[in-house]
Length: 150
Image (cartoon, rainbow, N blue to C red):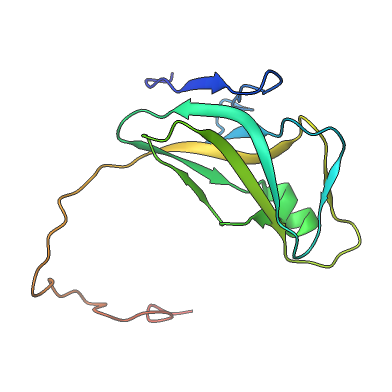
């Protein structure tokens, strides 16, 4: 049972209030609004889409916006910024910018009301940021990419 409330304001009359698709879903879907005709996501031509929604994200949380898996697997289409980060003090409309990395013939076509992204709330505690002269040592140390194996 949810313990936090996510307040949602319609900025566009036709905006679709998100819902969780299943009881076990981590994300809720965001829908496009305001299209007068279908649009396509072509390689090298990012497309900014409206959700028609603004959110009041609870203090201590962030809303992360992700690509829909079907868009990536079926059309090589993803969010232009990989993951959208919506801070708890932002009150403007949430926009979704899609881009394609492929010159495929079967490009993603989006119609008004389609699901265009998915979002989740994540707890984000703030920390005291401290500058220090040294950090504690670990077994890994400063080993970077590939340092823990394939």
